[in-house]
Amino acid sequence: MKFATPLIPATLIKRYKRFLADCRLEDGSEITAHCANPGSMLGLKEPGIRIWLEPNDDPKKKLKYGWRLVEHQDEHFTGVDTSVPNRALKEALINREIPELAAYDTVRPEVKYGENSRIDFLLTSRGLPDCYVEVKSVTLSRREGLAEFPDSVTARGTKHLGELSRVAEAGHRAVMLYLVQRTDCSRFALAEDIDPAYAQAFEVAKAAGVEKLIYTTKISPQEITIGPAIAEA
Image (spheres, rainbow, N blue to C red):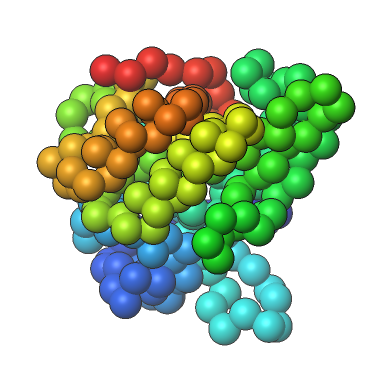
């Protein structure tokens, strides 16, 4: 998935009110950017870090910049826009680039299911059980090389696991796909200390037949694409 507009570097001044970030551009001017991430962004919002913004000239948008990336040492990046994983994954699913899901020929995003929920992707194909795919963006890393989810308590995520469990029990495929939006991690783990209820709900879901997939991303200021699968720590 290529960015619609070339990204520009900036320095983070502060992130506040969840969706706002004050930033300093390279010419010294200060602007406010939209932060498309309602999570805690633990470890990704320290003042002074180098970030990348996507400018826009859309007259319907009040803010003319969107915060897309955090840059780390050795040219590693983290994608902070939570809408990007679904867009990048949709391309990969349509192109059958996820081996475990490549047998499906129809990809439908945002399909209603469960109790007032929408599944990220419903995959169908003649002769195969319907496959419900829930996607979570993973951006937390507290130990070198280890990506973790979640970065804060997520009642919504726990609810999704319960609904996936019921899908699996009904005879369909149910997949929890964790998409690691970091280029500096090669292992994954659930952050049980941050949200014990979520970790427990996942064990229940696993026992019900919910599958777990963990994929990385390739990130640059030009594009974000799906990378190889990785294993749990």
